[in-house]
Image (cartoon, rainbow, N blue to C red; front, side, top):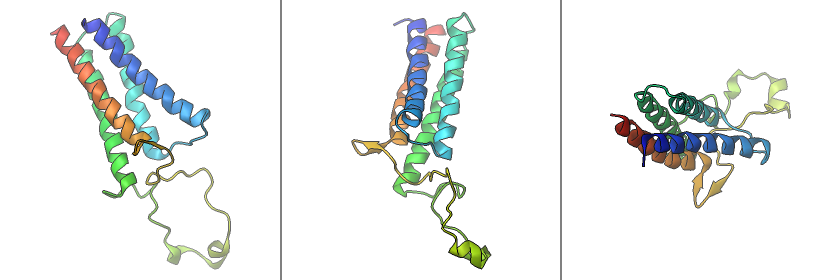
Length: 155
């Protein structure tokens, strides 16, 4: 397979994962958590890198595509671990609870919860035992292999 074909596959792979995330959000009604959003940025970077390469950019950029795919894969693996309770996640989006000592009486009795907050440690969708973050990690690491193969074809 040529370097251009490998670059096309890797670019389309990141685009598909990004579009899938948008589909889950806007068509499926699954609002993303903070770490879900973090996983989207490297995919967007990989799509941009791929577009530059396919338009004749320097082949060395394929290594940056591999790095972008690796970053989103690592974030996905970390996020999946948070969901499974293997390690703690960011306190800003995990269910560590509120500091009740810092709340006044009115706040303690209030039934108003934070609106729009999606917790990073809750699995809202899964397939074959893996959450979206877990699937993102798997597919992203496959994309790393495609990017590396594309970079090696250029060397």
